[in-house]
Amino acid sequence: MKVEGFVASLKNAETIAQLFEILEKKGAPVIELDGENFLLVVEGDFEGVKFWTEINGKKANMALGDAMLNSASFPFKCKKPYTGGNAIFVKMSDIESEEFLVAYKSEGLGLYFKVREGKAEKISPADYERLIPEMPEFKVKSFSEEQMDMMGAFFG
Image 1 (cartoon, one colour):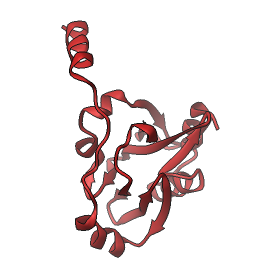
Image 2: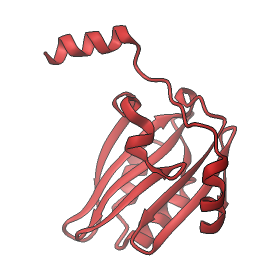
Image 3: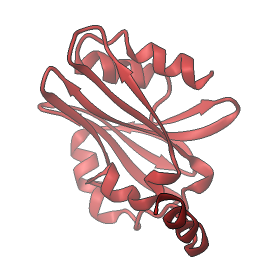
Image 4: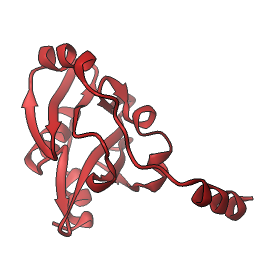
């Protein structure tokens, strides 16, 4: 599957529940695009109702830290006005943790997974909450000092 095709499929969602269904049908949270596996992070809102991704119980942007800068991000819009967000693709090869939890969440909705050695298994909300304290620290390769210095020089 191509990134463009995946992102285009998200526009068919008319509700957050439908968005989560599309994500699951497409293989999220670990999806294959152009022969490489990625962890999919989504965030945004539907007419003011927010949705987000958690990793081991923390919002993904906090769990990923500066590794977010090294990820590909694509904005998407859905069928209704004022709906959409960002799809962020983190290379699985950059994730150093062998085991972690992923949840796609919104008010009263959730889709929960345990990822182990690159394979995702759907779990219940209760299992997600129970497993959070047992998970090792989530680690992603981040930029080296040299890369950060170069970005600092580039962005001034």
